Length: 291
Image 1: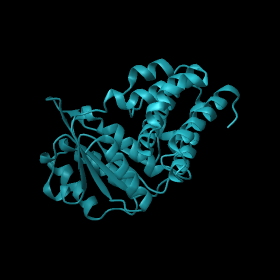
Image 2 (image 1 turned 90 degrees about the horizontal axis):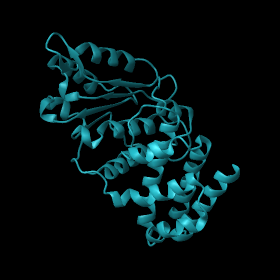
Image 3 (image 1 turned 180 degrees about the vertical axis):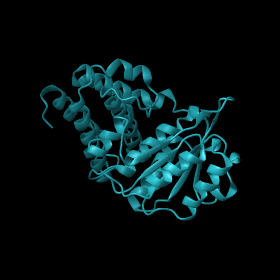
Image 4 (image 1 turned 135 degrees about the vertical axis):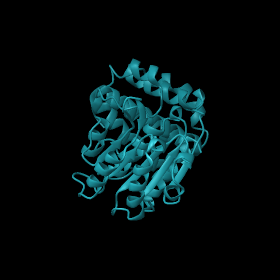
């Protein structure tokens, strides 16, 4: 499964209320399983209205800043003289203790276990107890490069998503980067027409474009805030160029405008009209701060 397919399935589960208590994301680290887990956690912990994650509520902003009182993140550490990496029983125990407590800001606690295939046997057996008796609305996300290292009883109690090393083709992100870059640079409307021409031919292309554009906006907001979270898009050159000049208020407003555009498309508004109106509203915001 590719990243966008996984993202769509996870968010559909959240919107419909059909969430599992535990997920496993299996894939090489290059496939950015951690950024995907953090984005899903942001959606799970979001306290805003409408589509999640909203990117603007206190919960989303805290997580974007690298901290959240209802997020537990475990990662392997070197231990002993050998220096071998492992996830030990004590860390899982601390996670369990946090899960027994009520959430402080959101409606649930989310725990991400990075390097889950490095869990010691004892730690896996302890984790199994949590999976057998899941705590309320809380959600566990295990990241693994090879699930063969996990107990079959753990696998049987998790929803497993696997995907390969492929990344989005450059052509998929190019229009969104061009549009967002021109917005940040204050370009005139006619400068956007060439990018909009190719993506307004049908509704699906327009929706895919909005997905990428919104991910880029969230990445820019994270970088502009000085947070050290991994990017969702991997477009580091683009982010380094535009994060210093991006205005945080503009970015959050642009996310809301994108959500309005999604609603227009869901009501069968012509894709060309919807996207052109979106760009004009974004331009107006960057000029004078109006919505």
